[in-house]
Length: 306
Image 1 (cartoon, helix red, strand yellow):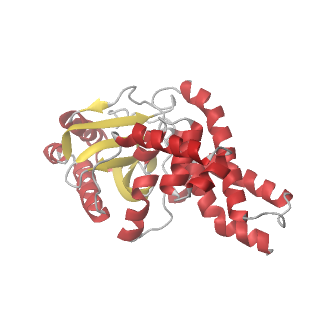
Image 2 (tube, one colour):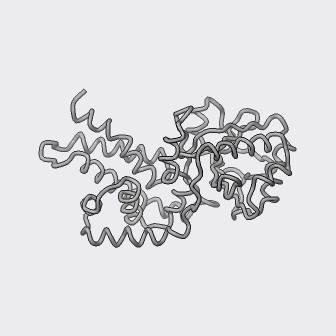
Image 3 (cartoon, helix red, strand yellow):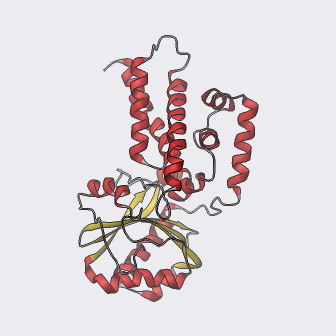
């Protein structure tokens, strides 16, 4: 293996992390990284002051271009667009590892980033998540350092009010979700409702291919009834699996051992505040394959999109 190949492979997780947070899609992130690899192979390396800076710049600019072209598609998207959750390949992550990546990798955080224009999103991620200096951000975006400071400042202000205010220990999140999964699998309506905040909301993405709600559903009782209805209809054919999705504990729901949805959660450690339910088959294929389970292409759960 050549030194340049070895360097690229060592930096690949960082490059993929940038692209995934920019685009909300593992497949698109891999396409961007592959494109960066092709350009890396074709470029002269001797003249580079910093190979890492060059690769981060190329990856970020490719992601910006792809995000700009994707924005029109998202405007035409049927229903609510949610990022594709990323299933961790670490079966038993440490609490420290989860805490380190939870806030900036979660589906809720990436959904929040949708408020930012592509360049602002890139500047904010590079500075706030990947700890790049303003000089590095400026070189990556081809702007002045002062301009980048302004972009990041405005992005912070734009996201400040909506960012989660609760820093929840992973073990508390895990305990809460296990209790919720047990109550959902056994159809305990009162227990489900008790684990949900009164103003809890559920947002679902069916991509126009499976049933989903067009607007967020709000209220502990309403959400509890959705999960209760699934269990009433399918009984023991419903199974929940606790996994790590996009850096946080989440749930996979199987019906007759076919993957029906991937669910991520926002909590305060005591109650569930929000649920993001991914049901679009196009965004579940990787998870189903990783779990060795078939994918439910069209499934009516009775709750439609919980």
